[in-house]
Image (tube, rainbow, N blue to C red; front, side, top):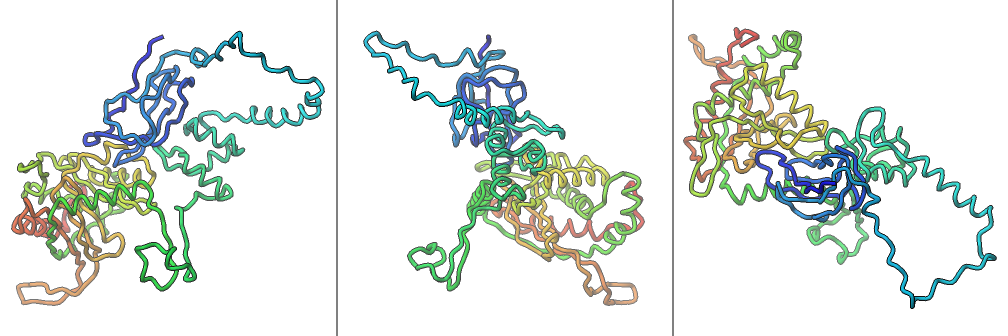
Length: 448
């Protein structure tokens, strides 16, 4: 039988390494083709590495918690092997070693005891779970093992919302399901302190707090986000320029055409692709913001790969990327925005979906905020925050003179890396985005 190395696969353009989260099978175990053997995590997404063919995982070359580079071997694998070939045999007994004493027949258990012990074991043997249920969702050996030990049926497994790749149930999901009486997924670990707690027991960051408090441990993704934000602030001197745009024509056109757009193209028309269109045009006018820094060099990217920051149901942040965004018309942008947003909510984004961005937009208006000062998504040099669209009184210039009217207004906040983007470039860019939004034509055809 051929023995090969299983290598850590490539998981996206900018992903160079991954952390080993969980070894899903033991060394020496038989594995089926495409069965997940290890859970890994990058700074983008969590995923699993499958077995290449039916065979035996001979030896792990890594351990949980290791950080492994893409392309490095993680396990030795025998294609078509059998686990019986890797069973350890007992060492032969030395001639000088006395044989173990034979048990007295009077100490043998009675038939009733044997039956009482073996009956539940036989029952458990009959409760072995298959690797997939009626939904077709795959369950890893680790998840199935926990389910069998805890008496979780396949029907219950099928009902657990999965947070893993393609909606798979992870170890955290099933343990949360079990710990909450098989009703809901467990919440993050919370430690509660009341005012009676002695000052010596209190968390040092809360020495001056007069009341009780809670300590919630960050999950792995929040820790990565925290590090990413700190690295960005320490890397780039941030400057933010603000512009207020009159988007009345854009709002009226979208409200008038959104139903026809859905009927014709099968896609919901939100404000995001309309604003993305203006950002893409402005990047074409000012390519210096579509860049990254490499030592003493500024890399100006030819392709516009537009990231769109999105909040996950967990509250964590993720940035899916519209690759070659300048190649899409409005219908194409709407389709990409809707697809990425849906898969972000479902936890089905892949590493390639969130890598390779060259510029990012963040819609803080989703939360009712009128403006914000976003942090740059490294190694990019700029990010644009979109504020809430609100009706406000505004001065309108007409041939007959200035008038005050109710208009749909919106703040744009552009944060940029002042090492390479000066105020003229950063400010001119965001002003150009506003100009494209304000010039939106009410007579624009649906296909335009």
